[in-house]
Length: 384
Ligand code: MG
Image: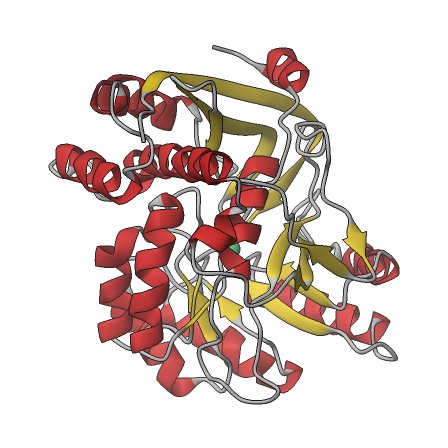
């Protein structure tokens, strides 16, 4: 156990998009990532990534890691993962607890798990107690807008394209006005009518309670797997109200953080499905806390992931280790969010990128995160 953290390097990487796209909260014109590289005295290097949503400057969590976390980490044993999580959380509590500060902690935590896996020569899921599954069904996240409204036909073509690419679960971005949303859903459903496809919707909290309810009522007949972020994350009573009034499972949590934040969702019966993002909920350690807490409330956990390849790898390790919440012979398994929107460096970041095989993603069996990061890609897109 004579291994110490000797350096923590943050890489802020960015790439402009040729064609900007919109979700309900704005236009995304570049893809960014805050990547952390933790070096140890034994030569093992761990990789982590902070969640950086489409409108978020990656420099915020980078500054957190550089200025607040690095001084805590240097000279510590990287194997004291839980201890370091608490040290980082306690040291930043008065100005942190949510948002990019917790994303910075998450990135570091992922890197520490990667180091531990490499040190013990095991995949992370093994250190978490083993894999409940060795393959994960991915779902296509997409259906972003290139103009804004009136794109139902293009979105229906996109749905067919996802189906051809092996996806039978898809999440449609809504929140562009209820009339336009419903038109898109009907057109997509008609395009997929002969296919056995499960849909989900995500408004990214575009509406208040009454509109969110109106949209939900109109979508009940679609047999959606879930209705994601129907209202703003602060409106926990709104979540509870929608959950009691709608015959659709309510999902949320990509903008919630740590077990303390998720506890509010659970005690208020706000969600059927909790969606912590491993790059912002507190990392793998944070996810572990949340998964156990959710289990005690009978809430399913289905992580959110929109990051680059390191975030995907961390999510895959965690999803492999999540027990089903409601056990039965045909229990519902967690699925992997597999973003299909434009991302110039996500695949390029790995020497061994993830591929779909018969509509499934295999959980890597290599040590740590089970990936090889391509340093040339980091150099190519690095901005700091
Ligand atoms: Mg979402």
